[in-house]
Amino acid sequence: MPAILRRAVLAATTTVAVVAAARRSFAQGTAPTRVSGGPSYPFTLPPLPYAFTANEPTIDAQTMELHHDKHHAAYVANLNAAVKDHPQVASMPLAEMLGRLAELPEAIRAAVRNNGGGHANHSMFWTVMGGKGGDPEGAVGTAIARDFGSFAALKADFAKAGAGQFGSGWAMVLVDKAGKLSLVARPNQDSPLMDGKTVLFGNDVWEHAYYLKYQNRRPDYLAAWWNVIDWGAIQQRYQAAMAGTLSI
Image (tube, rainbow, N blue to C red; front, top):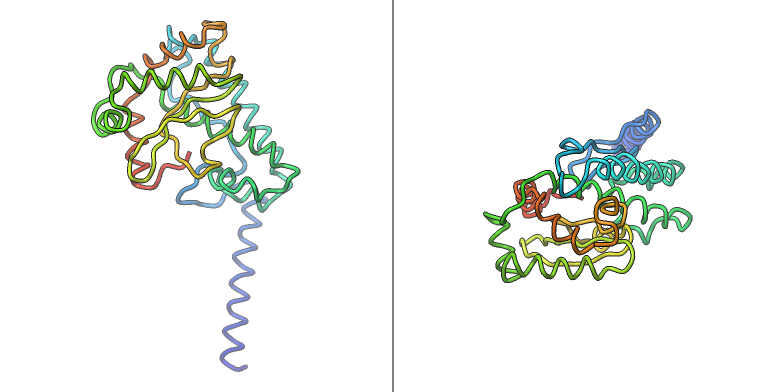
C-alpha cells in the first residue's frame, strides 16, 4: 500500500474512533471533558453553596427554596428536554450554546433562549450571594470606582436599571477581558452570553425572587439585596474573567 494511502487510512480510522468514543459518551449520559464554556448536557441543578436561611432577613428561606428547587430546577429540566434529540446542540457547553443561539434549529431556539438563559443566569446568581455585603475592596472595588465613579453611584444606577426593567428580567454588571465594567438590564431570562458578553454579577428582578417578602416593592428589594452580596465570590469571578476562564 502506498505511503499516502496508508496515512489516509490511518487518519480515517482515528477519526472514526474519536467519533465512536464521543457517541458512547453521549449514550452513557456523560458530558465530554471541556476546559471552559460551562456545564454541558445533561444539565444539572447546582446545589446552593449555603443554607436556604443564609440570606435572611433580606431574602427569606421559603423564597430561596422555591426559587432554587422549583424555578431553577424547571429551567434545567426544560433545557434538557429541548436539546436531548439534537446531539450537535447537546454537545455544546452552555456558554457556547447561548452564544450561537441564532445558529440553533428554530424548533428549539426559544426553549434554549428561555431555559438555557435561565440556567446560566441563576447559576451565576446563587454564587454571588450568601455574603455580608459591605463595600467592595481590592481589584473589584478599584474597577467599580473607576468605571462607575463610586460604589454609591453604581448602586444608584443599578437600582434604576432594575426598577426600570419592565416586567421580568435582570440587572447585571458585565466585565470585559480588560476588566472594564458596565451595567445592563436584560428582559426575561436573556443572558448577556447571547451577545458574547461576560457577567460579573447580577440580580434577578422576576417577582418570584422577592414577592413573598417585598410584594410589589421591587426598589426595596434592590436596595436590600446589597446586604447579602459576597464580594469575595465576586472577586474570584473578576479574576477568572481577567484570566479568560469565567464561563457563566
